[in-house]
Length: 196
Image (cartoon, rainbow, N blue to C red):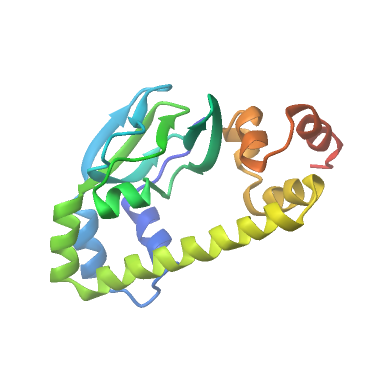
């Protein structure tokens, strides 16, 4: 079953990045979200398109990927409560090099780029919240980059399992193997030898 999130879930999620943010600032943001939905297998954004809206995932699981020489490479997964987006395309309003595809039927709350900028001007706490979210994302990317350079496939698998074990039930294993850059056969051996 697909995970779901409510406004209360998002308030708790966003406060993980900025615990002191006030209720009014969160309501200002969350009340601006417009419902969107997409079916399993469809693209939210395809490479070459500009991401015009930032998506708060209410339901479902998505993957962000890119193509290199005809091979798909998984970058990340999004699921409730999290954001689905291609940061460089959204924040710079330029064509995306990556794509986002729904792995399950999915629902979102969307806010357009221009409206989000207006909210930042109106509410410094919201702008600070997003800065802190970007800082956390950057720190996570640096950690992942280090793991790819320094860790064995077993260590990468174990660290992923410690951080995101719930994804083993939500995401087809071939995509997790791709994300971790582990051959599917080796991934299967690691998965089957792990005491869950």
